[in-house]
Amino acid sequence: MLGRIIVLVIAGVAVVYIVRFIDNFFSQRRR
View 1 (cartoon, one colour):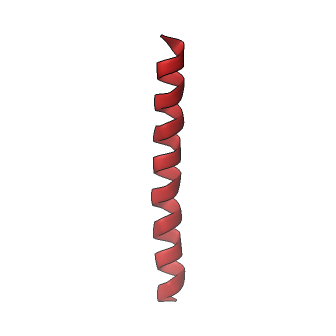
View 2 (cartoon, one colour):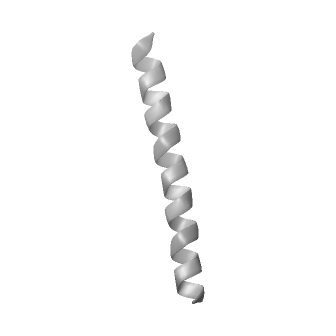
């Protein structure tokens, strides 16, 4: 059970970082 929670937390953080990276990438290309 604890392992599943840790995996969910890591997946959530990874998704947030990927979304921020993509948003920053597109923002730089737009200028």
